[in-house]
Image 1 (cartoon, rainbow, N blue to C red):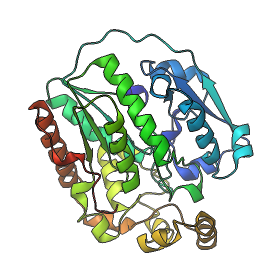
Image 2 (cartoon, rainbow, N blue to C red):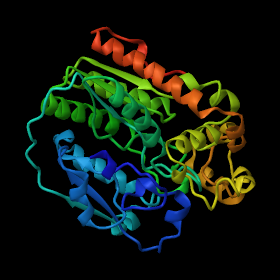
Image 3 (cartoon, rainbow, N blue to C red):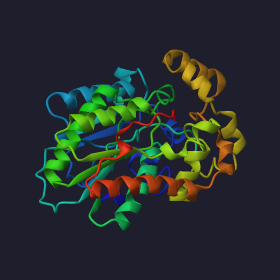
Image 4 (tube, rainbow, N blue to C red):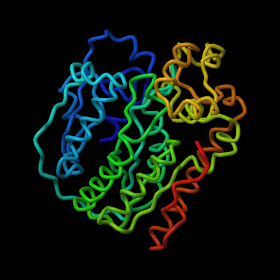
Length: 351
């Protein structure tokens, strides 16, 4: 199922999560996009006939009441160009598929998924879905080694700020994200009846992570754990000023598949990439004023990276992956043993 969705090569296939910011910018100004709304049991293959340039689906069962209407309205505020509601509405086609019955399934011991900002620019050389790619590299490793561990489909929208001035990024807002997570957990646990739920992400916003935890708390399901998978990587990332789409994320995505990096940019144009990076300090300074942020981006030729691409050369991808895997393994072992973990915290280190 997930092989039909998770990208294996950048800038190919129908899902825009596998495409880079710079390639999407090359599309004609009137190129349209499709936002599917379907059941949580709908096979990704069934959505491919809707057309090219698919956004990640939203799930009917996870959006009770008017939540679907409010989420779609927010997506239209952001995509493909932040703040251009009218233009976005003319380019983004919402396809609302009928609700489908859910087939009977066996009860997993642990049901796992990520809540990442999969529609978020990651500079010229990485796909929008960079965060999900990293999360699922860990979850699929656990699935291959832990009995009764099942990987479910991801929730692909979340809270973000830095990507908005560059376009092709979606900020779901924390309130909407909390409701969506709660609705998804209620729906998927009613369907699959797991013993426990394990939720992860790698996205850096602490408000995004707190919204996930708030959604888990608000859900009807109590046996869960959450983990920010980049929490054990602070010494390689935030402490080196490498926050978003820089060396850390580049090498971790490369570890999954070298074809997920845009060869026209990496590694041959590393100096060009470096020249367009923004520092963490500048990003934090500009975050409260997105108009000023966008003006700075245009004036200084910023490419969407907040970090240090040269950090790549000082990193060990296997070491970092093992650290992520180890904290996740510890969390899952605790869930299987019926014990609470410290993974209920959003993580205090700024990403």
